[in-house]
Every structure is written in structure tokens, then in C-alpha cells.
Amino acid sequence: MQANEVLYVLGQNSWLDWIEPFLTSPSKDVCVVAEEGSLDVAYSSVLRVVNQFTPEGVIFLSHHDTLERDAALSEVLKQEHGIPSVAQPKSVALLAKDKALMSLHAKAVPGLNTIESISIDRASEYLERNPGHSLALKDPAGTEGLGFQVIRSQAEVDKLLPSLAFSSHYLLQPFISGSEYSVNLITDGQRSLLFEPVYKSENSIENWVHPCRRPRYCPSLTTDSSIRKRLLSCSRDYSKEIEAFGLLEIEFIVDDSGEIWFLEVNPRLSATMRMVSVASKRSIFTELTSLLSPTLLDDMVLPTHGFSAEVALSASKKKELEASWTRDSNYWVSSRLTVFEECDQQLASTLSKITGTGAI
Picture 1: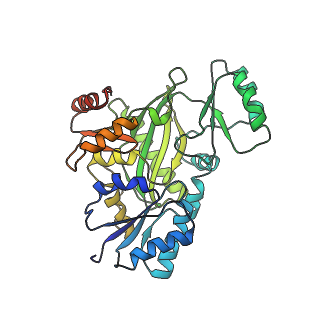
Picture 2: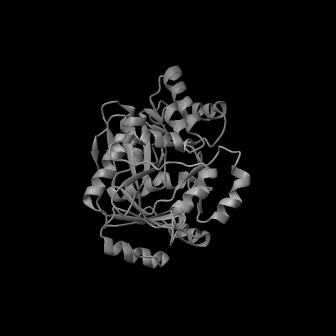
Picture 3: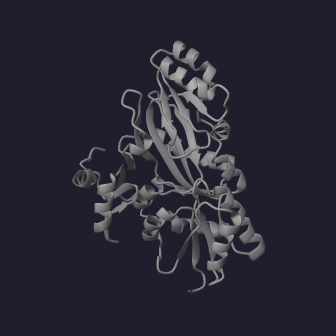
């Protein structure tokens, strides 16, 4: 191996297949998988590779469950081995599993609304006072929508009472209908390289679909320019508020009146980052190397050079598409399908051919 390579430490083995095609030099840069495990186990895995060559730096592509460990390991590499590394600080790693604290930080961001939580014993009162409204039940430490439930009636509240009445491990909030977005960025805590917002479809009680099953588009053709600017501004301000360092995905919902509401932040690699990479023709993994030197990160919004879309895949369709994929393909496959085209009409046509879903 040659000097000045970058070592990427992946928090999940399944990411390897979709990360490698986005590396600037997959034959030169190195990936090592360190899935959920103790600090000692991960340290041994990383150090074994580091000792084979002299990396320019180490970049942690953390999973939800490896953020805290990676924060600690990053400090060890810096202090004991003098190796520059990119990982979220411990304070941000802890934030990933505390949705209430995420929301508290959002209160400090101008123009960003937060959704107040309520206790289960007040759920009946809320539904009675707000006919036609619903509640959203979330795991306060969860990710990817796991455990998410929509509570529409008193009968559903009564079902939950026995399990939640004496528990504090839940987050119950009014359900807000509107357009859902996420903004991805790379930040050093002050400067931010922002990607165009990803439109994640409509979130409504009447036609509710789990967030993981909805189609996503970047850039959106229907988003008002003022809302786009506000989403980007809120994202930049939020990253400064939490003093993040590395990758962030911040999720929002814009209601019918144009108000922007904070949902949550994922301070790690997320699925929509593949979409913004292909739409901007800029690899997030290459851009992350800017953080290895404190003065190199561009403070800007990256323009798009085409259109990307992402849809959920069945297991059989995933297997079929994986078998036909090459480095020249304009699609990428994992648990979801990401497609890129240079014009929106062609994107719709390509989606229709592959999945039967072409509407943007």
C-alpha cells in the first residue's frame, strides 16, 4: 500500500457495496468494517490495518450504534498515534440517541419550530380537544423509523396505557402533516458544505406510509425557493448549535402554512447521502477528507447536475438489479434503489422501467 491513503472505518458491513463505487480511488483507499462491538475490539481491527501503511487520516462512517465508540476511538488515534481522524465528538454521538435533546437544541435555531412532547396520560385530552388530529409515538433513542406508530383514537391510547403509564422511554408528539425533507451536510462545526434538500414525499394521516417506504427525490421540482433557502439556513445553524464534526442528515417537515418543523438529526452516514452525491456529482466520502485539514472545507451549497430518486425494493428485485449492476450503471442498489438521470423526464421514465413507479 502507498502512503497518504485514507482509511474508512465502516460501522456496518452492508454499507461496503454502496460505498466503494463512490470512493475517488477504490483501489487505493482502504475500507475496514468495525461493526457494533467494544472499543477494544474496534481498536484492534483498525490498528491492524493502520500498522500496514501510513494513512493520511482515518474517517469514521459510523452506524447509529457505533457513534459513541467511534468518538472514543477517534480520540485515541489522535492522541496516542498522531493520526488525524474524522468522527463526531462524544456530545453529538450521545445526541443521536436522545430525540428530546435534539429538539431542545433546535429551539435555539431561528425560524425553526419544534414539536412539543406530551405524556401518555394527556393523550386522551389532546385527542378530545383536537378532533381529527393524531399523535406520533417514537422510540426516543431509535432510528430509521423503528417503533414508529400513529395514534388516531382513544382505543389506541387505551391499548398503550398499560405499557407506557410507568415508563419514560417513549416520545409522544402531535402528528404534523406536510412535506418531509432532509438536508445533508458536511461540517466542521462552523463551516458547512451543504447538499440540496431531499424531498421525502408527503406525510399525512389520510394516506400515511412509513417513511422508509416513501419515494424520495433530489432536487425537488415542487419546493418553493424560499422554503429551500430556509431549510438550508436552519441546517447550517443547527450544525453550529450542536458543534458537529462530520456528516449530518437533518430531517424536517414543512406544513401547509409553510412553517418548518424539526423532526430529528442523524449525525452519521444516512441513505439519502447517496442521492445527494449522485445529484451533485460530488462524493461525500471524498469531500469528508477536507476535514482532515482544518482549512479545506468549502462553506457553500453544492449545485446539482441532474436528478436522483430513491425507492424501496423487494428482496427479489434487489437481487435482480444487483446481478446486472456495473460501474457504468446509472443506478445503485442496497435496501433501496437510487437512480440518476440528467433530466427529470428521463428520471421518471427510468424509474418506471425498473420499478413501475415514475411519478415525481
